[in-house]
Image 1 (cartoon, one colour):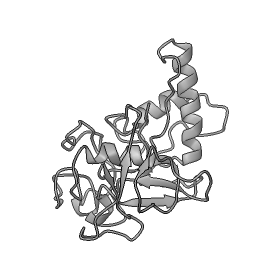
Image 2 (cartoon, rainbow, N blue to C red):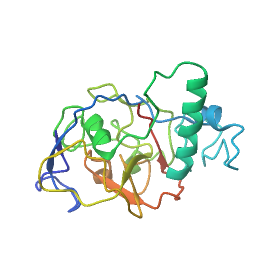
Image 3 (cartoon, rainbow, N blue to C red):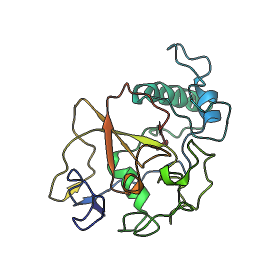
Image 4 (cartoon, helix red, strand yellow):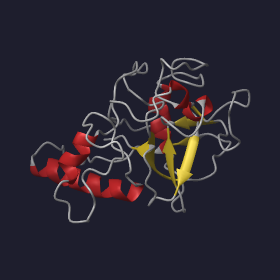
Length: 223
C-alpha cells in the first residue's frame, strides 16, 4: 500500500512522504480502542505503582482508556500476555503488542487511498473530533467502522504505535518497524481534541516522549 500522503492532500505535513510499503506478515488488530474496563481488568494488582483507572474521564467502562503512556502500555502488555499464556488462550509464538506505524496505517486505510477511510472530506457524523462539540471521549464504536471493520481509527483518542519516530524514506520498503532507537514514540489517528479535521487523516503522524500521558491518547492492541 502507499503510506504517507500525496502532495495534493489538504492539510498534509512534510513528514508524511508518500512511499510504497509491503507487509509480508499477517496480523490481527483490535476492532476497538482498549476500553477503561479492559485496562482495569488487566492492570488491577500491578506491582508497578500504576493506576488501573487512570483516565480523566474515568467511570465510563466502554470509553477508551487514556492518560496512559507508551511505557505504561508495556506493563499492560506484559501482564496481558502472562495472563493469557497462563489461561492457555495464547497460541505458541504469539503475543499481544502495539501495532507498528505501518500496520496501523494499513489497517486504518483499509484499502483506501483518500485522506480518510470513508473519503476525502470529514463531517461530525464520521468521528469524534474537535468540530463534533462533544469535548471529551465517547464510548467506542459509536461511529461507522472502516471497510475492514475497525472502529474509531479516526478520532476519539490518538493511539500509540510500537515505533520510534523517524523520517520516512522516499523509496519502497518491506515490513518497516521504524528506527532502532530515538527519543519519541509515534501515535496516530487524531482525537476528540487538539486540532481540526487534518489531524484525523489516515496519514497524520504524531510523536512524543514515551513517558507522556494525556487525556487525548490511548491505544489499540495488535496480535
